[in-house]
Length: 158
Image 1: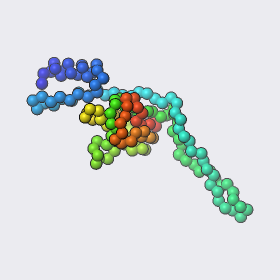
Image 2 (image 1 turned 45 degrees about the vertical axis):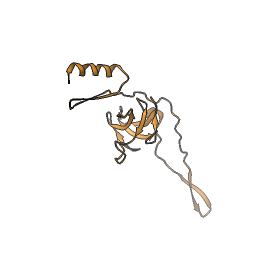
Image 3 (image 1 turned 90 degrees about the vertical axis):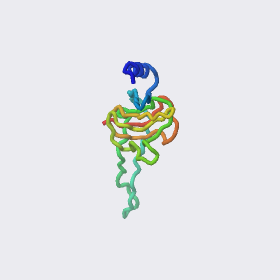
Image 4 (image 1 turned 60 degrees about the vertical axis):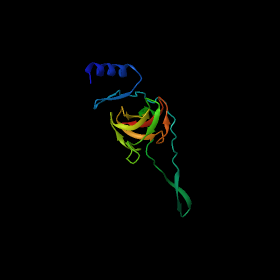
């Protein structure tokens, strides 16, 4: 394959909204992919906070309040990062139907780590984390369509 053609294709992908391009010619296969990083951080979020319920235990004089349940601290909006879809397509949590998901709730992720795949026009686009942290919430069901800029994951920053 001609080097000038490859340079032109890279330039076209770089300046267009195309994220992946794969070409095969005479047994030579070339894949050009553009990494799109979402750098949007949630500034305000409404996260339901579970209220602590008193634990009641019987005593000789009746029912008394002994202690309050302690739940894990809820992540605050200031330390949450939203990973958004860079393209329109179908959301998949795993590389294949019978494979394990890339991440689960509670998984630790690092920058560049694959979180999911968004399929668009039969191309599988790996969506990578742009921050280090822990997956707090997966906002899309497996196999469901996603829109451009739709939130996919909430990551608690490390």
